[in-house]
Amino acid sequence: MARIGLRNFRYGILDEETETYAEVKTPGKAVDCKVSLDLNSAELYADDALAESDYTFKKGTVNITVDEDDDQTYSDLTGHEISEAGEIVRKDTDKAPYVGFGRIITKVVNGVYKYKVEFLSKVKFKDALPDEKTKGESVEFTTTTLEGTVLKLEDGTWSKTQTFATFNEAVEYLEGLFTKKA
Image (cartoon, rainbow, N blue to C red):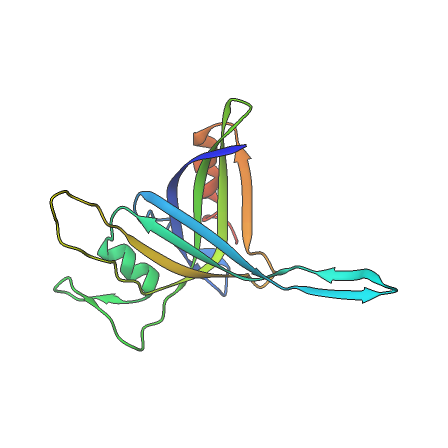
């Protein structure tokens, strides 16, 4: 299997009481996504051999890069308000909401395209400001990367993944994850 593409970022604000998501939204076009996991790591040796082990999920980190740092998306994901004048107002008392976050990875298996949905059930993003630089002799595009912490739901679920034969099936599944109980 070779992963050859990334698209269709989606998010929805999580209501923790009901474990349902608000309206599914697109934060921008997908540029990059990196997920890293922090796993429990415990091993018990007995009779000179490994007898028990635990490598369960503790938490994770997701870094997403989008083509456009839209103010409304940034406000949704970081918990900051947009004033009536249209400015993002950041306060030290702001709290980022938990969101569900998903994406579609295009891959090739034995010459056949497949579409894998990867969904993170509970993520909390934090503030990030893009690096900027002046235009020199040539134009260089810069983007904004947001970092979030991946947590688990009350029942222990932290991720859902499924692979589809068609892109449309993958989109339908991904968006459907936001319309049913997490």
